Amino acid sequence: MTTHAVVMLRVTNPESLGQYRDKATDALARHGGEVVQASPELAVIEGAPVLPDAMAIVRFPDRAAAQAWIGDPDLQSVHDLRRGSGTSDIILL
Image (cartoon, rainbow, N blue to C red):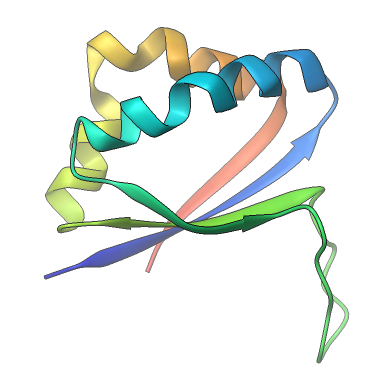
């Protein structure tokens, strides 16, 4: 069953994030993932959450594909670029 991941980024190193963005699409596609939507322009419509600098919704064919993407040893250098850009939280729905 299709699953989605919410990616929340707090950026302290925009250069690393730019390098990550250059590689992220291919890295996601390796496990059937794709970005549904991403934006740095967030708006709260209820509540008072602490907003990250940017968020993305990523779709995977299933939870196993999402887990394979994050754990793929061949993609660790790509994940390291994201992690080196600041902090990131990724939550599967």
